[in-house]
Length: 209
Image 1 (cartoon, rainbow, N blue to C red):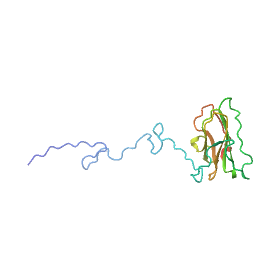
Image 2: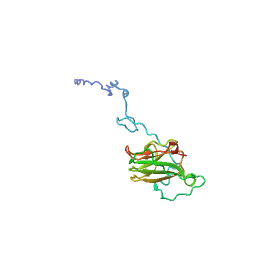
Image 3: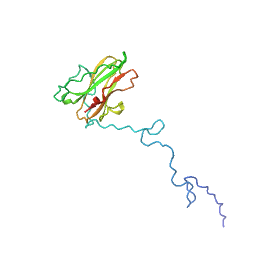
Image 4: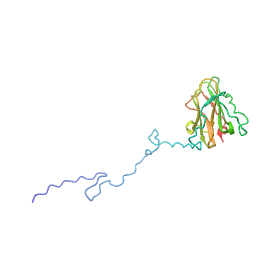
């Protein structure tokens, strides 16, 4: 008879590895739950790698999202053909705002008024006056009765190009298919700096019903 080969020692099982046949390995079973904050899946990461707060969704402004609103832009006071108002329109045309009384001489400023006008009041009209170096302005809206405080909180309706001379301009947006009420506000598209005075009407007049 041939002698048996020497036995080979079996190393002890490590964490998560099986042991000898029929014996469980050391550390087998479910891994312990991680401790401490963990990056969230599917959300935007903040500076610390953790998910930041989710942006609040903005509802639709129109029954048909394909509708663009008609006239997204601006025109001079004399430019453009205006529709004849009927009995449902404003009794007087929307006036341009006065120069803010709090503006310092030489500082840039913007003031505006908001109202409905035109045939059966189907046009949102915004009259804008400005003077000095004024950045690009954007009219934003969101459903409900609270005007958006910042551009990201609403949907863009129209823009006004930057301007460096005294100007009176008009923005007109068709309201066909609009899911009113809207809250609207005119805001600078970029940081205007501390010198620009942007005078907003009262919040109640910024609600389109």
